[in-house]
Image (cartoon, rainbow, N blue to C red):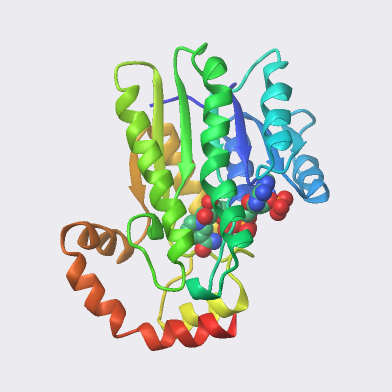
Length: 265
Ligand SMILES: NC(=O)c1ccc[n+]([C@@H]2O[C@H](COP(=O)([O-])OP(=O)(O)OC[C@H]3O[C@@H](n4cnc5c(N)ncnc54)[C@H](OP(=O)(O)O)[C@@H]3O)[C@@H](O)[C@H]2O)c1
């Protein structure tokens, strides 16, 4: 268990659907949240929902070296530096791979994979000052089961899962823990109307962001290393690891649906 009360939590993606709900839930545990995002208005609104000083907005573009440096240098000047880093930002990219531009793919990798690496790297000296610290990556079902129409996005989430797994093994004998926690589909602006329409047709359940945030905060406090939310996603993620051919056949039968929605996206 890791007590969150009194800690400073650096939360990326705080202006997003899951991130804002996570921010509220983290403040509910007694933590102070440094809320990172690009949308200043939404960060200010988030801060106004809580007592003064509990949410500290920090505007930064994490796909940009200057934005990453700004985050690290700002929190390094705090009296109470972060002992928990929650990576809840990401870009989505639904579409057939051959239709996606290289500039879009590069931005996807910069945001979803290189930014977490850079933040973990930059914050490591601060995190290691605390006897107990945690880095939490918000992953995805698609980080364990690559989905057609989400090939590049899945690649970034597979990469993130690998990073967290490697780091948790690299630091297994200390007080710094690495957690990879995956929501399933969640009702936020992350999913474009085309994704929502596909999910409906494929009967994919979409969770409410508040419910997801509650489960994520419970998992952060419990210190569990890995978590996949939802049935049957939990089962499918495991099946894909053990019997990928079975999942190939199931998804092949649904490929026409994916292509139709991806081309409409
Ligand atoms: N929604 C789902 O169905 C779902 C399912 C599984 C996993 N997830 C994961 O859950 C996490 C949160 O997703 P969500 O649904 O809350 O998405 P969301 O509502 O679209 O929010 C995305 C967040 O990421 C931030 N962001 C994106 N690019 C950024 C950049 N270059 N620099 C700084 N911040 C950036 C956005 O900031 P601004 O808005 O301020 O630009 C926003 O706060 C993501 O890691 C996502 O992969 C989502």
